[in-house]
Length: 163
Image (cartoon, rainbow, N blue to C red; front, top):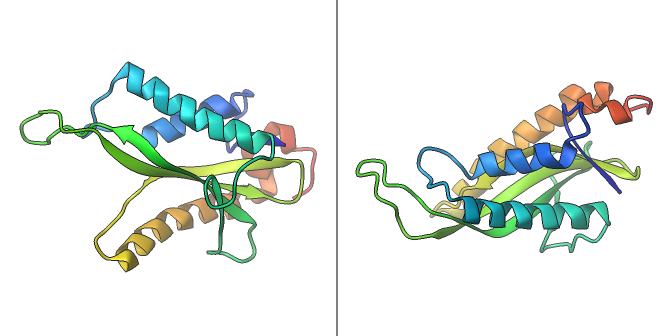
């Protein structure tokens, strides 16, 4: 199974995806640590490599997204990604926390998949709010899937294949 990241033209699909996944868990409210960051990148890479081998475990690593029935979309899942928060007022480091990360991709029955969108999953006190928050991100992935499908999601390696 070949893996591609949308809008990537230089055959850096895996690296581009890893950059997007790291961006999803980074920001001014998070402490950057080269050791922890490399550990997280390695875990992201491990699951992406499982995807390339067709060995994702349903429920653990992958789940069908049933948001838009006309698109075969799935989410890769990481449940225990360690981050360290930074207090926005004091700048002090908090205790390490585990967050969940999602990567949405399309699979059209071909020997390839295309990564579309990555984000940190927000968990709210109300499960309905959690679902609504995630649906915003899924909607963005669907937008990427639909808008660029005729151009094969900006992936040159797929340009000779019809949508």
